Image 1 (tube, rainbow, N blue to C red):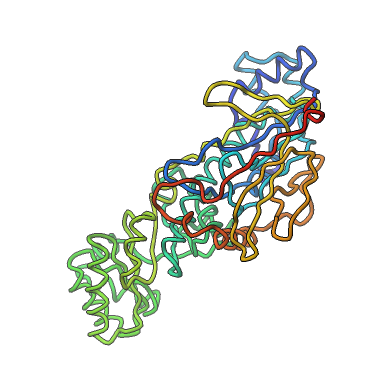
Image 2: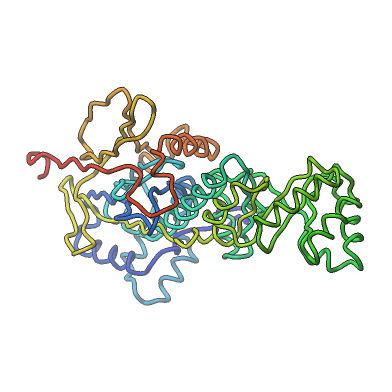
Length: 438
């Protein structure tokens, strides 16, 4: 194989997906036309909206879902799969249809975020891959969006790569950027997705030098006086004085990474102004989340750096999405287990708005229903794959950023609060007519 070939995603799955396939191949049901739907039964505790993210990555991951010799050999070693199943997997190509909410779209409980229609065999093996991508990226983007709202017009940067798995760090940076973060410290995310990167120095650089002044001088010599100097290694007031002494009043910014950030920001602003560094900005970081950012809105902070809380979804590391079979050969099917019920049949959705643009309702429709759209209604799902191929003009990451910005503007102000409450937009389910349910 070429060293430049995309890594296979085929084993990023659970064994029971493939044993289900084996059973369906054995009795002939693997070829039945099926639709699986991805949705969240509820939002994480305290959340009033979710943000769709990861579908761009998912399309690439489905294209790479191929069982090559090495993947087939690994499966054979388990002893769990017969030759018929292995031969079928050797020829696997997803040839079905995928549609869903575009990245940057809001979702609510029950929203049909993604639907996968293909033969049962083709679709069932994608479950774990679909959920692992969407549950991670939607959780990060949803948390990041709350931080962006809390920050108002002040920029937020993602710097959590050291707090998660090395590949999750890249994907978290992408999801945070989608949600409105302005930059990332992760160079792989910058290279892969074109996200602006940032970063200057940590406390280790100051400790390396014999004095704080030596460290600041070395940094400004290398990066210019427009750099950001970390001033809290020893004493913040002395650090600020030394930073301005070394870099001059045109110093780009100082960063404070610990302590009572609100009080320290006020003191820093007063000191910087007294020293004539009126244009030097104040960056704060250190265990920030949306609640901490909200408390700092009244303080003289110019930007925020967020690490752990964004890459972990700010306490909600999964979006709790599920992948459920909802239709077989055109017939709705539904799970009835208590607290884990699903609604049968393919679905679509539209969002209603006031003439002012404020969202008022999300309506979940039977998939074959042709709704009459009002002047301020908007259909939500879009085609993503047709016959296994990406559709033309798939939304870009930048378009997703703009879509989310617009969607958040449409949320009623109550729905943007960080306090617990009902979903920002209510959901109405339109049941299929009896004639369409068989």
